[in-house]
Length: 382
Length: 152
Image (cartoon, rainbow over all chains, first blue to last red; front, side):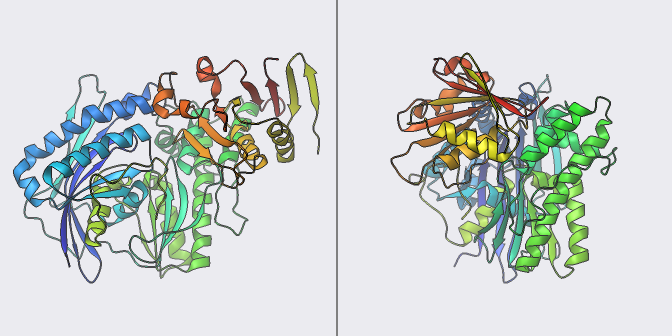
């Protein structure tokens, strides 16, 4: 059976174009992973004008940027060497924006066909989950902005491991099963239970808006610029989280569903009724309502399912308050549970996480032929 | 349940004081749908557009959970019994122009006889919608209301 793998990975599901090279090995403890190269091109400045991702614009940007990223990669590692070392090509197959997904998938298929390699379709959310296994080793990793256009419109960052880096079991994170996963992003809010690697049981999800969407839309109500969520969180650092009591829906329900749409209505009403507000206080109170709901539901799931480990995954896992609150609350109420959170650089969309999931899939013989798979904008986790 | 109607020309205004009132309105509208209709929803963030679509889906015998499609923009739901129309739920909040609708595949569903299309933030793509579109305008202030409007 195969024990090691080197995976070339591509991610284009939303507004980041990304390419990575990830190496991994399987041991009795789990998977050891090293991110050799990690290139991310963010489209956030492009979408600031329209106040959000415009699908057609995003897809065109991916089509322009992806060849540049692959070119950057081949400057670091010559194509012939890459071809020899890569075992398979992993790519995000969904969920995401159809036209954006297609760009990455077609490029991945082309490389796989030309190099005669198998392909690994990866669920974007599975990528976010496996981002928890990626470490940032300050000793041998350097990250820098390698190109910025004159108008400051686009930005590309590269992280790379210095040559000769070896797997390090001392700093490697391992999943403890059963593992409870809180997935929080702009499009998803779900609690998932994993009994083993690549196995997912959906415990509950949002009934309406995702947590990231709640952040972005309430930020818009407050008149904050795109991307609203992170801007709201920065403003919240200077505010009183208990200034306004916004609703924490579903917390008294036994089931593990979320609902965030009422928060918009409640914020909108508050702003209508109060002409002179302290924006920082309102921002902090909104963040508090969202975080309290996410943490409360996660603790409820811990009580119901007694997992050995808990992790957070997805773009909103970069939220400072959520990361620390969940950690503190778990330490208080379930000290035996191992808590993991992704490194900030791997919390938002990137290709290294797709490579991480790709390594695990490859070492479990879950590959496919480049001809037979299609993208699915609503791909479920399974 | 309080549920009041006022009629003026081809517009009607409903007070929506509770979820039950939204459900009643959704049932009333669902009763008139055969497939091929387009419903345009307008109203600010938090005014109740997605909540209405959820109620409409239930009234159309759709068992799936209807969520906000802001991220994926378009989502299609099929009813329990195949004779009833499908529901195509669209949210054009993030779109900037009507050219993008083709790329989204909206025209695979819009006005198709087996599909009811309901669009949030529909005023953004008014040009692309049929004249027979049923318009629902949701307001939160001063009272929670919805105004329906359709060309006779």
